[in-house]
Image (cartoon, rainbow, N blue to C red):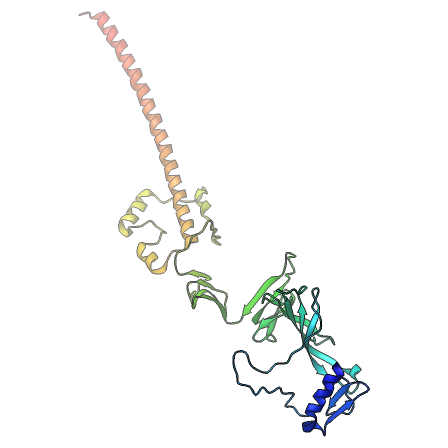
Length: 345
């Protein structure tokens, strides 16, 4: 059957290429541009225009030129190759052929009347190898799979080294971090910054210097900026400055309450606490404010302790006075009794 088809093909092409075609009945190979065809159809030419299939029919949604690669039989399991394209070089001897890249189609599972799951592989040859390796796969569900450590970006050769591995400045990849065995981590890099958008609007912005903005195109010099409301189940602020436990040191001089009263009367806010106009203009440093508020609470605690001690001293004095008054009353009663005995009424 194959020989008949090739013979018909050669006869059809004979009027146009009779000067360049050769048919070898012993092998059934057809050569165009070569006198020693190594394949069933062997085309050899120095012309760079390539092989053209020209469809002269009217264009429509169901027309167009096709290259069809069909097989006999139905795949009865996964990984059965349906065909592909190979790209490379070859000398006159086919043993010397070298494949540099290829595209292949495989069955993903056994085919049935209502299911023909297929995937495609894309392979290229590495700089230090001679055999093509799979770089990308499109599954039967349309998912695109990249091999781990394969870059996806606009300039993969513009790269740097992180964790001992290359990473493009303008791309992403899935890599195993050296400190974790849980699974690949997605590394993504963009030299000038990143924007994550929904509905055509930037929602999260990461600038080139590492500042992060949510709802803000520019974090304006802040490491983290939020334009809008935010809610937390927990927030922890670490402050590099000294925590105000020094208030409880014996060397700390607690400001007199009279000085505090005078300051509040003049400035309308506590010392070291920003005024309302300042907060409205510059915002509020949560960490610094918590530190200052704690300082005021600790100072207030000392004032309360002082007041408690003063109250205790006052209570002791009052008790002493009451005891003195009781004793004096007793002595007065005794004196009255003596006087009454000497001078009865």
